[in-house]
Amino acid sequence: MAAVRGCETKTSTPVEPSSEAARRRRMEIHRFRFLASDAAVAPPPLDGGLKRQRAPSPPEPETAVETVTEETSSVKRRKAYDEKVERSKEIEQNLIERTEPEEIKVSDRPESSSSSEAEQDFGSDCPKFGMTSVCGRRRDMEDAVAAHPCFSRKSLENSRNMHFFGVYDGHGCSHVAMRCRDRMHEIVRDAMEKGESTWPEIMSRSFSKMDQEITDLSNGAVAGAVPRSVCRCEFQTPQCDAVGSTAVVAVVTPDHIIVSNCGDSRAVLCRNGVAIPLSVDHKPDRPDELNRIEEAGGRVIYWDGPRVLGVLAMSRAIGDNYLKPYVISEPEITITKRTAEDECLILASDGLWDVVSNETACGVARMCLQQRGKPPSPLPSPGNDVTVTPSSDKACSDASILLTKLALARHTADNVSVVVVDLRNDL
Image (cartoon, rainbow, N blue to C red; front, side):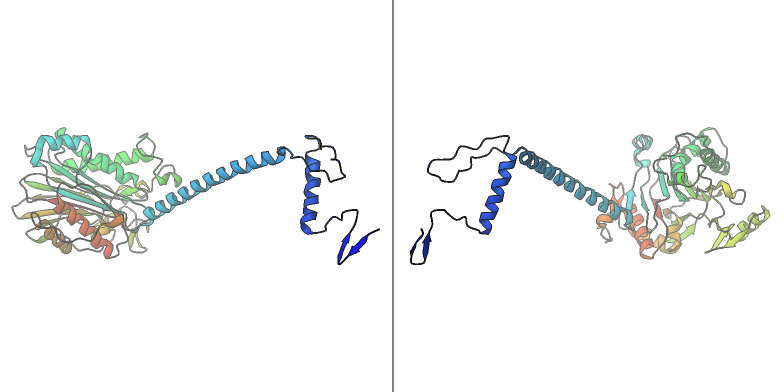
């Protein structure tokens, strides 16, 4: 019989509390009894009728394995996250570099071993020059430039001081321009050393041979000539017939400047502050070119400007087999006698000449050359979008960079390539 004292009630049998913690505790006891039933035996009840105390159970096999798995997965997830972050940074950097509209690469001396040996042999006889090549607002860079001072030991003028410069403006893809950059000076040198008598013969045959090499290349006759991993035209057509390049080439000797032009790139001589064009652009609407195309059975169609068959915006080029015989590779050649008043020679693609006149280009180059020996004139800061290599002549490099930036500031829509040669030295 229960005894009552105040508000407390005392019973002989203890009552299990019904709180949330107690229910949770009962559930935990049942769970551990189930998992540890085969691994451990509960101790016998203690004397005095007290509740049995639960013996410490060993680590549950499932729980231990799960913990190790979680730790391993966490490490893997962390590593995967770090790798993903690194890949994202690389992709973002690549996109920035590819979409930057003013990526500029400047070089002042060819890095080929033959040019280096020639410069060591001839020393100060090599001219001072600067080159700039810019992708601009185009998706792909299809221009190529070449400079080979002292490229030949044999001269028609009995002098070894001959220097080769060229600008090649590709279209359809870049591999024809790159092939011309790598081979044209060698072809011209071979023609000279074989004893060709006159400059027109040398240059005409050299351009014809260069065009034949491109034809063989497109037909697969020249194996391994094009780096297929970087040539995007392999995704368009196996033969690459719709690829070509302009070519403006200058051979500078102590007495003459020989310019051969095929296409709409241009060479301009600055003589005593006066701009003298040494080549004439081959545009389809030029009267003599228009007559030649029509006599060959072709047509000039005005589609965003005059174009051969409504496709190509120039009437002469190396390559473009699908447009022959309307588009030819025969160059126009000029031979100019050098004078003491000659200041510089500018070779450039139409990306410059579309927005900058001959007179303006000569004025800019002349201003930069006059700063030699003085503090350089202020140029726009190169920034991250400009890559400048060590220069043998800062004035020529400044001139090429400034002309390129002027073309970009005037919103040229094409690649821009510029070569500036200082003619004031005794070559």
